[in-house]
Structure formats: structure tokens, C-alpha cells
Image 1: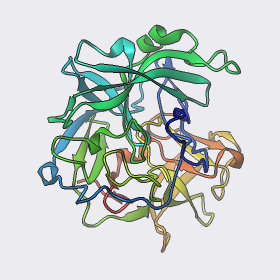
Image 2: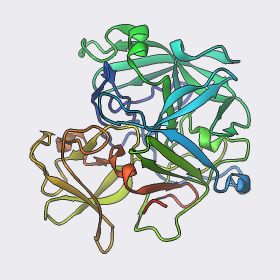
Image 3: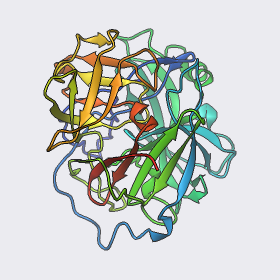
Length: 366
């Protein structure tokens, strides 16, 4: 779906809002593929609770297998099989642009889960709303597990905002759940909310970095922990989040990497950028130099990513019609001067999120 904001409760002061970062919306199977970028941001300083927050050498080089499912002839997202509370594993959409695990109640299984009454709401720009509560459970995936039960959102209701009566959630939780090819969201974005990345809560410690490379032809992808490329073609900084994660690990505005973009031959402009596996297509602001008119791009325009500094081109996409590969849409500047890469860049590049240094690194796949 599209951008959302988590409604924090009165006893949890909201972080300051700075800008709305765009997310993609597309129909995959019968409903929208979830692509979740929080509206809330909070950049600034932020201290640690003490010690090295990344004492996780046992995770160095650990590789976790992901799937690249084919939906209606396209490969719009990545999934990971996750066991919640010891129950049978279910596929979860891997989302680098949202924090934490969010599970549809109908897909939860019979694992050991502790449910609370603390409400959590996620709203999307197409009008779809997820209501639920905080819950906690042990989680395991890809040969690793959380150190203890972690907090996640248990989605108990799917609906539409009044001004969007025909949104993807119009028929309620059960219909929405049946329309999806996944049980929920496995969010590994780096910013701090009560529901935050499971990669920062592993039995071996908090992962200091993770890299994703996909191979659509093979229908697979790999998530690698604690391995930073030695010779990246580009390095983009992320703003520091105002608060660390609840466990003291540094948090970053991982949807605001300072990357540079241009259409055609226009000089590039650096804009906040989300490198986002959860979005099935590229979303670019009309503020990108040379951008086509607002809406889906149908004229085969080429969008290019550049290094910041010497402005060398390192990746490009020629606009087409295939979600997860080359579908591009343009938004007006008032929607936020930003770019969302969608999942396409992960098809031909290795993308690393470095939590220790606050960087996104792009490299050739190994």
C-alpha cells in the first residue's frame, strides 16, 4: 500500500513530524502489496545505554534465505518464512522501510503469544487502516532467533478511512487476509518505535548491518548479517534518529538516505531516499530534475541514481509496466521531495544498511 503513521498512545510522546515519505501502491493478486513508510520522524542526537550495542560477532556473515514469489507474472517483493511463538512458519513480506513485525490475526497460528491491550494503529494513504494491539512472542527465521519474546503488532481489524470507502481493506480482515500472499510485515527499518526491527533483537546480539541481494531468475534472495562491502560503488549517509531503539541500539532515519537522482541528462539533485524492498515500484518526486508529469511514467524515461560527491551514475531504471522491476510513478512536490527506489535496485545491486555508521552502501552483488 502506501505511507502510514503509527499512532502512539498518550503515554508515549510522538516524535516530531518532518516530512511524508512516499511509498508505492499497486494491486498484486486481489489486494495492494504492503509498502510501509512511517510518517513519524525524529532526527537528531541520541545516546546509548552503555557498552558496545553491536557485540554480535557470532552473527558475522550469517546468511538468511529469502524468497522472490511470482504474482501475476511479476516479482514485486521478497518474503521470509517466520515462526511466531513456535508455531508453523508463515511467509512475511520483508520491508526495509518500516520497523517491526506486524501480523494479521487470521495468520497468527497456534504459537505461544502474549497479547496486551495496548492499541496500535497503522494508516495508509490509500485509506486502508490496520488496527490492533501490541503482543509479544519468540520469533525464529533463517536459522536465527530472537533473544527473548519481542513486541509486534497483532492486526485485529482492517478497514477504510471514511474518505476512502473503496480502499484495499474495504471488505475487512478476513477478506484482506485471504487476498494476500503473506501473513504480515517483517519490518527491518532502522528507526525507533515500540515495535522495532527483529534484527536488532537476536539471540546473538543486535546485527550491526544487513545486506540484501536478490536473484529474480532463481526466485531467491539473500539477507546477510554483519558484512559490509569492502569496495562499495556508493555510500549514502542516513540522519541519526533522536532516540535509540528501546534496547539502546542506535536508530537511524533509514528512509532518508542522502542519494542523488536525475531523469535523462538533467544534472542530478540529492534527495531523501528510501531503499525499499517493500515497495513494488519506484516513487519519485516531481522535484527530481527532468521528471515526467505526475502519475505513472509510460514514456520509457530513464531514472538514474548517482553517487553524492563526484555524481557518477551507478544504477538506472527505464520506466516500464512490471512491478518489482521497472514500474515508476511521479508524485507532486507537496507529497514530499523524496525518492523511494522500490525493490528494483535489489535485483542487480547489493544494498547494505550499516547501523554502526549510519550508512547505506551500494555494491555489485557477490
